Image (cartoon, rainbow, N blue to C red; front, side, top):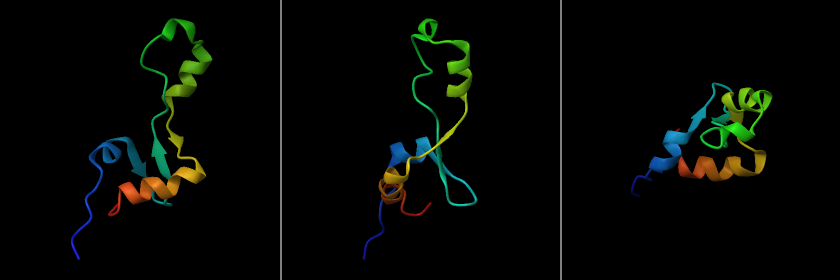
Length: 65
């Protein structure tokens, strides 16, 4: 059987922790920042964990991670 290809867009956006959780950068911190408050922008800087129902999809896109 042929090797599976890793999704190149997904490998740039997701990281696996040592416990097997999947981290990603939060969305919404690139433009239109004047409307967003400082508390919200601080929160957007921190990485977030992938939602439970999307984990299966991300693992499918990254078969060897």
